[in-house]
Length: 291
Ligand code: BGC
Image (cartoon, rainbow, N blue to C red; front, side, top):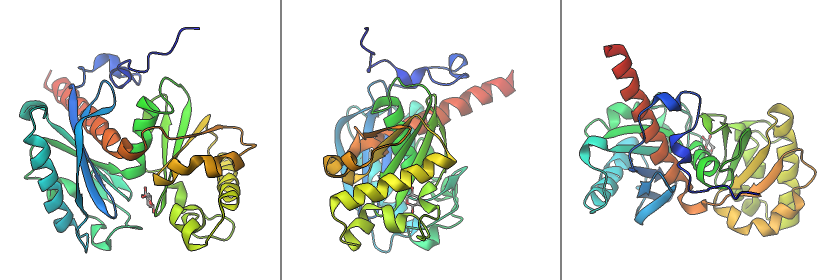
């Protein structure tokens, strides 16, 4: 059997339109805005890996759009001062947020300061260098996992489920992200939303032993699978480091269930890839309409 080439430029060749698109730049920047830290890195888009160290600054409190934008600017300055930084002409920057994001506008704020609701991040970040795209945090992680991590080279429908303060979900079909699935907000066994029972923080709050947590996650995935059948669930979030403690209890699903591979950096990598792809699409559309 030929070994799949996991370093294949998967990011270059995904989706029916990609053949008509110019190649992606070699590098882009990803910034992952979390509840405790804002982390950024320069991403090698061929390998789906960071070039150099990641850079982190604690999330300001309260985490209002203006305060977070100030920290994103500092993270970006540091990354752009490095030798390997993408050049200004081809700079794409992806920024993750833990909420629904459509056309760079934030439409939910379950686990972030509510002043983010309706925030237009194009306006908020308009003085920043490069082409900036904002996306949901789980979508960024799921895109990275599907292209470079546990789902690489795998056709079909893959769902990444991130277990942290909340529960995020990301749906990727044949390498293309269908954003904002938000299945952590389903109603589940009386919990509204499901994340109140299934998140990593719920496990701590409810003092759940690992087998019980694994069993709860199993029932949640069965529920999800009924609504949206997939071929693979990738389990991410910080807790996936402990996957040996709870994934053995997640059995009997139609889909394969595997731990995430890019854990810490999935958000950064996926954000960078998303931004570079959006920029390439915008450039191709601009070219098309000028012809
Ligand atoms: C939010 C999602 C987010 C997830 C993980 C949920 O509460 O609604 O948008 O992806 O938490 O941070």
